[in-house]
Image (cartoon, rainbow, N blue to C red; front, side):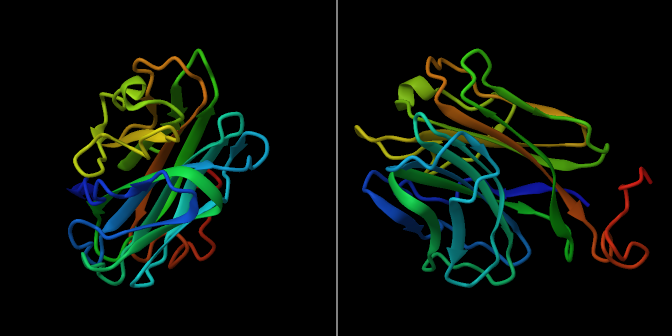
Length: 253
């Protein structure tokens, strides 16, 4: 099994908005074929605070015109600056055409929101699991997040960050990661006085740990940084023959 990139720039430059609303719909710039792993990075800025800083939030969801199933892998929320960052994914079962829409839905009105979309090749019939994830929310002296302690096997590492900053302040994503872009840009979110800029990228490796560092020229701690490690599970593996309850590895086997 092996992850490889298929397309890292599937969201158009218009896949962002500074208009108050609870949805953001866009059409991909190329078809999203059956069997690909689609990963969507989202940034939103709720008009009304959602509460305290939060890991594993539930304010975002994704649907598409072909009724593929999208799963929220991670969502973090910074309350003081009302910033949400999220990573969602789908193993595509029905091809999404360039005339179809993909819709990000938010549980509360957002002042500014944007998405980026990438697709990856995976083995036929395999499923995808989140092997690990971590967050850094509002830490003024550290802009990194690390996932460690994983099994030495291939992982697709997705790093992303969102902040209430200007594009110039935001700078680039972690230089060790290949950018997941929107309309050819390495940052996305709505421009103007109400803005929620973001950046993100991916690494494919067999390492047991990775770090995502989005420090750049940042001077504001009001951001959410997320790192997610995905792994493939072969058809028939995991909760299947020989492991009916999905317990492999639970007891260190």
